[in-house]
Length: 157
Image 1 (cartoon, helix red, strand yellow):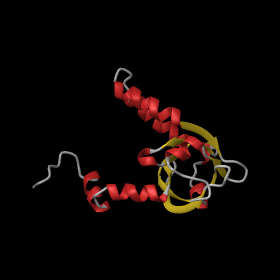
Image 2 (cartoon, helix red, strand yellow):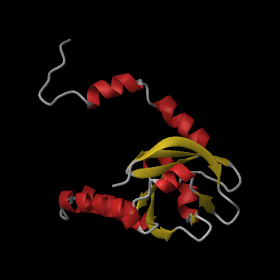
Image 3 (tube, rainbow, N blue to C red):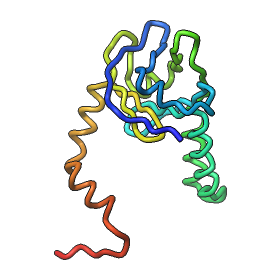
Image 4 (cartoon, one colour):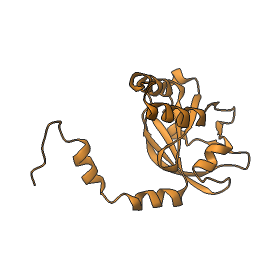
């Protein structure tokens, strides 16, 4: 099971290649065989999943999907066609699809943020990430209180 964490900065080279930071590369499960799925992430970022973790996400979605719901069909058509299989090359780089770079407003030779987020890696344009954080009015502590609140607990106001 992958366990990615940490914050890094890097750049994409002119051929759209990214060299993963060593700590993230070391966290890749051997069973993934250096194969990844790259997808259009939420909030204008790029998701990078080791193949093994992607398969778990696919299964979760299959378990949730109901073909007769319009929203499910829309999600499938928006998410999966914007995903691609990639492998790390001999130099330890991933080639990123131009469409996904456009989705995340990432340009070659410009600084990007790389975040390890549990089972995936996220790539962000720093300006887009800053705007994302500004749109989110709550602090990390406030969010943690909501996420980790036991079920069936009612707020006392």
